[in-house]
Length: 497
Ligand code: ADP
Image (tube, rainbow, N blue to C red; front, side, top):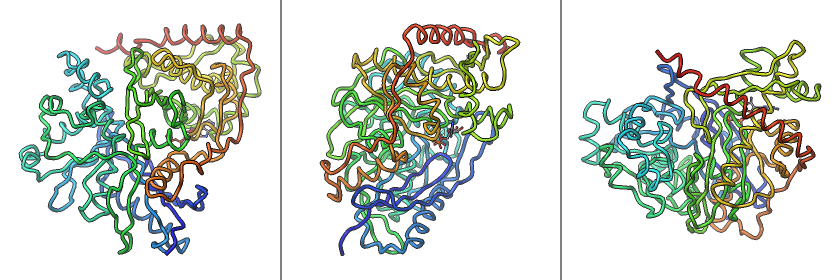
């Protein structure tokens, strides 16, 4: 039967989605379902692995039945997922031995401090491209092995398996036949040697993680195996972590191409081609997705509080009713009247890496009003992204000619214009902003021959924001922002005891 569709499964941090694509790469339909977040202690975040699978399988089935799709016309499935989130389960039964420890979870910060204090940071950075941080999977695996009775012994015998969300999903949906991950997901575990392309024995020994529990690592565009949907086997031919999938979906496939995603946080990635670029400015090095099996690297930087500063304005400060209102208020005023807001709610990420920085607002005078504060909040997203861009340029020496954007907050035209102004380059907003799912669909479709590279458009641009701010104004604003960041730095350190 003729193949008509590709389905992308997008297993995100707050929801699971399934999206249907045709031969032109257009999305025809999508179904989404939110699932439960667990916060057992301050700074801890967990998901129920079975709910991850049931929500993901549920949306897939809904998509198929709602749109009356004959599964034999589905050429392949692509998977993209929340990265780093860690699941351990019994090989025999498929039962998780602990909840999924989510990427946001800080419970292993002390182990990471220990790694740094013992001087392992440099070795880990050289091999994995990452800085020792609770964010990545390695110390989360160790935590489960340390806290679930008998887990380590059983893992040594091959009875307990580890996977990121892609791996667990494929294992469950294939009835235990697929035990694999892709390079992009592996490169976020802090256990994978990104140049030798193998699990690293030294780091595994350091954290006492048995190699027997780790999945096979394949190129992102590979035949991973068949998953069974309503009794029909369908091949999985593309897998990538969400940010790398977005980079691929934005068609940032050439060295120097950059995209920034404006979600809860902001994630900026630059494709650096076949050469890894190790950062001196607080960025991490990671593997990018390719459909042809070639090895490709990216530099990545993240902002902890991006679009979520807008949620704070809405939910805590009650300055707006809906996120999109922020644009209306920001445009009502000429500028912020000298107000700068540094949303360091959970510290500052790259390039500062200051865990003790806290939210700060400076420059307030008697005339400052609601609109000024809202505008300052939106501008803070752009300033932080600009600093990521500067760090990436400093690390790679590559001139960036334009910035591709996606994510929920890129809908805000004020923010996009200000981003262009403050960076001094055009900002390109695509028509299809679901770039993560699109990336997974492209990967799967290219690998199985459903799409041809030459037929994939660069991604239609819906709007280009051109820079229009004078150099002197830009410099004055950036100076103000840096002075404000200085005021926010180290704030919680003084109050620790
Ligand atoms: P995630 O994938 O991290 O859940 P999304 O890409 O869905 O995030 O983006 C949601 C974020 O974008 C929220 O933090 C929200 O406050 C912000 N956001 C959504 N629409 C707008 C808007 N029009 N202006 C500013 N921020 C927005």
